[in-house]
Amino acid sequence: TKMDHFGFAHGFHNKYTVNEILGCGTFGCVHVATHKETGERFAVKVAVKRRMGNYLQHDFVKRIQHEVDMYNHLGKSLNVVHMYDVFEDDKHVYLVMDLCSGGELWGRIKRGQFNEQNAARIISEILRTIAQCHTRGVVVRDVKPENFLFQDESPSSPLKMIDFGIAEYCAPHQQLHDRAGTALYCAPELLRGNYSFKADVWSAGVIAYELIADRMPFEDDDGEMLVSSLRTTRRNLSNKDIFHAILYRPLDFERPPWPSISDSAKDLVQRLLTRNPDERPTALEALHHSWLESAAGHASGAG
Ligand code: ADP
Ligand code: MG
Image (cartoon, rainbow, N blue to C red):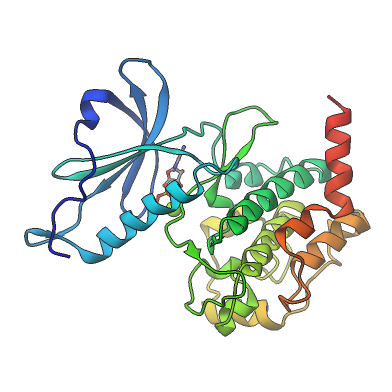
């Protein structure tokens, strides 16, 4: 544990030029990085080394190693951002990965540009990504719109998943017990302390509800508040209120826009948000739901 380096390669700055900031997170910021020889653009997460005296903080080492490990493990999955290279110097660790220039899913939710067909396409991609992770024995535990980025700016851009900082390995019949994730997206069984892969399917259901209704299933009570304002002026709901709603409050499919939403869409959201994980579909099963399959057929039929 007493170390001040990981053993990653040096010379990041010889190979790449660092450009504009894309966003910031827990350990530093993510920038555009241009490969000096090819001109190809990547994203680089620049994590500032956290030290205690002469040594790196144990938590920091664990988190970076975990993240690098997860990217190596999942990197070949289609919808997960690929990590190409890791470097370090005295002050930083550099994770070079695919650049997603289309922005966060959250950004497009705010613009409210989701008709049913668009929503179905996005939900399919999210479920497919989750299914890929599950096939590789990983529970994501942090399925939320912020962690899905569009690869490019086109309306048909693929969606890629980032940030596996709290993802966890899990055997087929294993249960996990530690609470991890973001309150509004947490599955009820996770709150109860016994969960597995299906917890990610619930979180996908929260995103699905949010995409279609433009509000969150377990937060606002009056239906007036849009997601955009919700995000910025989180009302004084405590986690306790949110957890209570997740565990017990009946889902609202009465208020607009639900009356004008197809039964098939409602059926899928309801299935994803089934409180008993044994009755909830797996990500793979959900992908075969008629609402998603007919939207996919439509899209390919249109070219
Ligand atoms: P942390 O693990 O520190 O929370 P994230 O991986 O969540 O960091 O990245 C922080 C922000 O940087 C993200 O919210 C996103 O806006 C941006 N970002 C991260 N990875 C990429 C990428 N590959 N392409 C474009 N932007 C990215
Ligand atoms: Mg993050």
